[in-house]
Length: 325
Image (cartoon, rainbow, N blue to C red):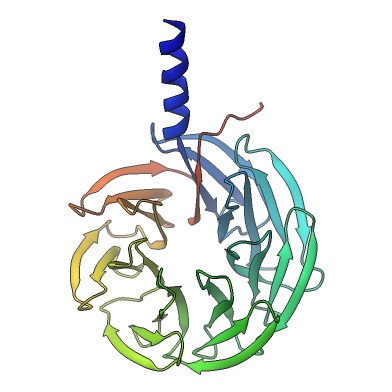
């Protein structure tokens, strides 16, 4: 009996999963147990939390403190993914308005965009050490995507209608590429061969060749394509449309819609995140204080999780969270 209990506990721990959600309207982060669908704990964080990343080992959560009325953020905040305990802020040392955030593969560093100072910062969040800072000199440097090999970063610039290509090891700006109007969403395929760019003003998704940076295709969207997320196997990409209250799933091969998932009027879907296996897609609904879980086979909504006001940024950590208090 004792052995059976231990095995069951180990299996349960191995299958446990946690979703971390940034609640930008109340300056908190929610830790949600994905098995039960319940919020385990909610912690205060820096003001206006938006994007979230989790370290490759699943131990550390990093959250930006963005910008809002009367406030220009200049810090990242860290949490222990296992206990949800705060680990303290990390200064960006003069760079302001951080938003886009990605962990650079095979490193201890994250890369973060800063809108106000128009740059990107490469920083070791655990040690609080800035490795490099690179100017984009573009307006509204908002979201960032990183190539699978960790060599290139692509920064979407809302005000300039461009994306900027950064050589990460050399900490050097390579060039700006013209996209559409109000370029915000950006993602790179798992193969690293294609860059997907969403343009809010011109309501389109553009696909660029990552090597030549030439435009390959354009998909016109009915709503604002505020976020793009590509499935882990590279066969599908999802686009959230906050003005239409839905998420549209496209096939990468022919760029045709596979499904439109209606979340409801006023839900305002923004950030999207695929599970590591790609079997579900999470969509943060900033107007509904919820995160929706979408089955990627049937395209049905499996669950909705209650979180905080202005739910937006999403991060995934394997294992469960056990608050220390």
